[in-house]
Amino acid sequence: MGIMSWLGLEAQPEADPVALDDANFRKEVLESDLPVLVDIWSDGCMPCRTLVPTIRRLASKYEGKVKVGQLNVRLGYQSVSELGVSGTPTVLFFKRGKVVERVVGIRGQHYYEEVIETDLLEPPAPEDGAAPAE
Image (cartoon, rainbow, N blue to C red):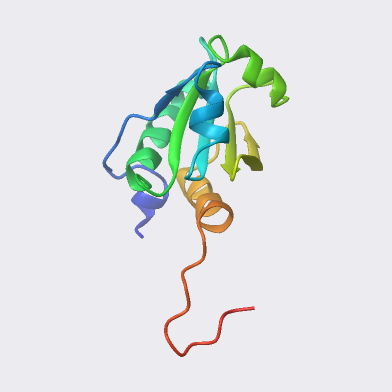
């Protein structure tokens, strides 16, 4: 990975995240067959706007492996309250319907990728004849 990619400055494909609200949060996040990254944002939050391209790149990179969604606090007030979110942006990582990591504020794309790779995705199965890692 080059320094430009590591910094998130290299052009990368983007995809639309799932639009979340109180009506679909349970189905799309808590009952999802895939792990889920949820970007909780609010109107007028400049750091939230800064995070949008990163979230879109993550949605593209992990398509089919991790569901990436965005939840506006206005449309998901009940869900945000139940999750104990008090500031934006907050990124929550869900696995099997449970929060496994919480990030308040902005981090580089590489940070979110590391959390996805280590906390959300299953480790690869050992090759035939190889002993499982301990």
